[in-house]
Length: 500
Image (cartoon, rainbow, N blue to C red; front, side, top):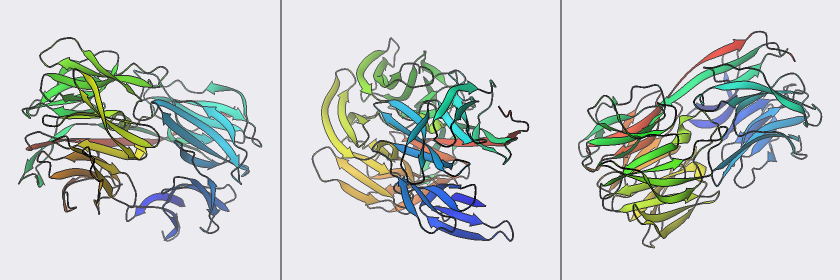
């Protein structure tokens, strides 16, 4: 069997496992998404460092670059045509909030690109008998976590599409993930899975160096994320799609249910209290059209004492891929903002190459630009220091644990290694401004650690099966809210898949 991923020591690699004796042989480090040609002679894969598509022989030798992604493009799932003449792959880009997802093929030299399909609701695909693409598309809200199967015919020699796409299923309650056919094309197997995020709160003890038993606050089976705390650290703002679209809620640390703060047809994210405690601030986008998120939104304010919501400023972009069922597409990303009682408010916006930080006032709107930082926005995350003087910026990497402290006062960027915490997915400043909370992803569950600014760290929490992508310390430093994702799925088969 050919396998790829973090099989051992949490390092991306391609392996061969013998089904006789279960011996394990590594073919290549820093590689994943491997696909074996039908004749078993070649492997096409993605490089986990450059994120380019490569090809090598079945024994791991003769590796060569096939396709390097263009600026802003992300390549995924390279797959051989059944006749072995061409390679199909997916690519997506997010530009000014607009998500573009497409499939195209190339010959074995990496040339002759031929578009096959473009649909921003695409979630997965596979090839059936020669000349037949089977793919899944996300349904519009309120069934945005369901997908259905479609097909597209194409010329098996050239890769050019033939005819119009055709819908194959009209089911509810299913997500067609990782579809695959038997060799004769008669059976389809897929993973019908669901992922959800929840909000947990835990007490920080011994000066924040220990985390007492976390308690789950949200008990629904939808997507819930922590936003920010009230000034007195007694109430947490959160956002959830429990009623079909993302709305804003607040909940006391000891309460079992949440109170609605803002609701409506628009998507509303990341609520936080203004520095003076008079407003709740949040991001808002119009309802997606055909599952595609809007390319621009607004930063809103609403009086905490009640009253109508008002626009603070316009924002460009929308985080994440609108068609993906992954809850992490509704947390972090750009545009995003942070507010602290002492440090004011900062907005972060990004293009394909850099992140731009801008100060803003909840009433007066945009102020001065504070800093520009190079970096791929799809692989960075940030948080504002309690005094508002700098941001901590982390970079997701399978091998490195790089961080930067970027000053708004014109000082040099301070670089810190958070080793051994690689694959950094979230960062949050502690209330004292002298240390940071880090979330380090792994296939065995995310680790939450606390690290001082010299790089000394301590593990706070790790539980298999929970992948943590959001952390929000309370202003008094006594509590930590965080948002883990849990996954649940089963393998299904369609035993008599239609052949036409």
